[in-house]
Length: 281
Image 1 (tube, helix red, strand yellow):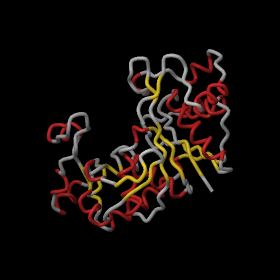
Image 2 (cartoon, rainbow, N blue to C red; image 1 turned 30 degrees about the vertical axis):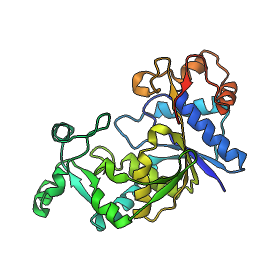
Image 3 (cartoon, one colour; image 1 turned 60 degrees about the horizontal axis):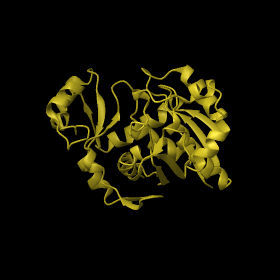
């Protein structure tokens, strides 16, 4: 059975790009007689807001989308802790005490990419780590060791076809944050497996993250779903829509009386409101 999911974070209101992902995931499941899940990714306690959850659900109903299950990541923390404990037990993660400013000052990256962590805390001795464990810290994946343990990996994308996983280019990624019990990478990999998600529909901006997710699937012995990365919606300025850049909210469209069901029907055919366009796949 095909099982898809829509997994928004309640850190702001949904925009047209979120609607495209939800509509495509819902359509893929329903066309095959499968299940469509909604998972609220609310483990960021400093930014998640209950009122955004209500708005998200109202937006989905406005679009005419129904769901078979509603879950919250904040209720699944034990699963993330167990996965992290597994990786810790095999020496695949290490605590990192560096601040963002320290990382930015010492790290480097190719143009347009976030700085790669330079491995500062990986070089600490066991005694040095033990002496600092009371200090706030995150947990990072020892990428070199993890890649060596997993061996060659691939995954399938509906547009790109068979893709060779190259997670190493992202460096020692964070798996548990200082202010949250899990990172996006770990939580989404664990949840998709636990919920039986067979097909993941999401924006092309998360294509690179899939390399890391494929590695975690191998390390944690999780099933490998099929991926469908769709083009991003661009605004009139040619930039992709984003909460932090003030993208027009679906709630505002609802308030203006826009027909959400008609909008969803247009999105299924890649027809966008005036002023918006689809980027490259």
